[in-house]
Length: 295
Image (cartoon, rainbow, N blue to C red; front, side, top):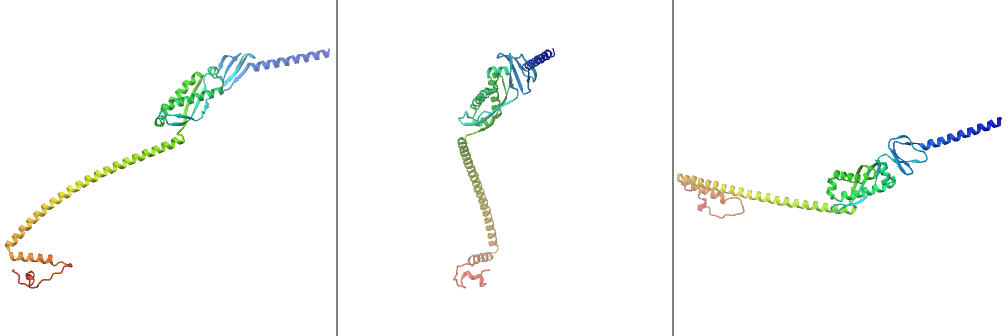
């Protein structure tokens, strides 16, 4: 009797253990957790039944339903550097990047399938948009209208990604550089243009200087002519006045006037120099020195 009771208790314990294990397996296959960085789709035989975006503990039918998870965070996309031909046929090396999130998991699963496939697809979308938007602009426009280009680029990428269940948060151009050979050509062209402008400015300055110099010379000539004219007038007036004074003096005392003229002749003739005069002391020229002049 004791042996039968012991065997009966063992069978009961085994059944309880098996039941607990089955219950645990059922519980584990029924409950699942969605983390804060995740969103999930519940599938039944591959068909979507519901989308879960809020984090927490959830339940599903065991064995016939399964759960797939998608990232709910903002994800980065760094496409490779793309060579773009601008509207003025200048090549440009563009390094762009994007930030996106999976906004509609069900649409994303139906259109793309996996996050790995999305990276390749979204890279093509971004590079196509970069080529299309920048291809409408010249190099000077790229430098001047950067904000507008960024806005157009974001709108175009976001419009292409919406049908995939993707929300593109941002698209930016990290760097835009000219290739080395183009940089050298642009530098040479800019240098030539600056040299041409400098030569043009120098020519304009020389021409302006010539105009100013010509005007100044003309004005100086006019001023000198006016001054010479005025001096001749004044000299004529002075000579006339001197002649009047001499005539008046001559009429008052002719002998004094003769003496004055003799003194002028002595002053002009007997100046220091290399000229030698050989004259007779008894000549008429030295009459005033002998005290026999007509005074």
